[in-house]
Image (cartoon, rainbow, N blue to C red):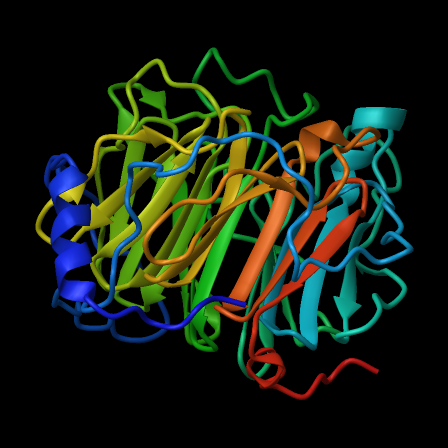
Length: 410
């Protein structure tokens, strides 16, 4: 789905780096090492060798008709409470997650947490991975997220601190993280029954490691088969808090970056540290980040993009989407990135330019607060999914590259 490497990469790289404003060093504050089931991985260092996305758009972002390469299936995935996450390991294996407390957005009730699997042609019927609460307040799952890697292994997390792992068809019973987040101290937090009050993100670069973050600044890692106790970063006596989506991405088990509002959290294989995010303190919007290589991350918020490079920090944010509500980004390589906004538009980095927005799925109507989910397992395939269950897949110019893993989904 993505073009190949371009000639003259060294020249382009120099131009791209010249446009990026240097940020502050990442590690401003550090927590003690988290307790995991195995020894921490030694941090990996080294600068990337591929072309980096430019933080400066080279096209005028105006809505256009869907581009060639995007499919538009005739049916949608049943909403079953709104979908809030999708992850793919190939064009024939994707898993979407949703339901739970999202249903409270439209019916004031909480349903089961559900998953649905994509086999390259159709979505299977959604199945429960988290039973609906029998009564009482809405407690879980809250705005679930998912990350899948080869094996397959998928980890589902949600803003109430619950986790579940599976292979696309079979799932472990949801279990809360040790020290799972309770009500945040921030007066800006409207509480667990409010739409968007609890969100989380997860990234699994291997079948033996995953990283978790939620929108109150809690972090945890799964090393082997055991999740560490949840820990939190604080700013004085007030916990971090961001309304809406947060992001985390791991290039390796020893390099992860998470974004929670105005703060960037970094995992080096042993500890988490905190530094300023690339956005101004008063910037609003969901956060998303994708790290295609150690030392390289691409982040979006509002209508802007910022690029982190090894040794140079974050670039000055630049606009790439006039709609201003980017909430997902996926960069399988530094030469290819796709970012999506809540309206169903996508912008694409092809190694030299950011495209104008292209509308590939309808703007959500029933679950507009659930955002757009995005997964690009390679530069030849992407899946875009909205909370309403509308989806579209992109196939690059090499059809065989997207189908690299046989689907274990029946």
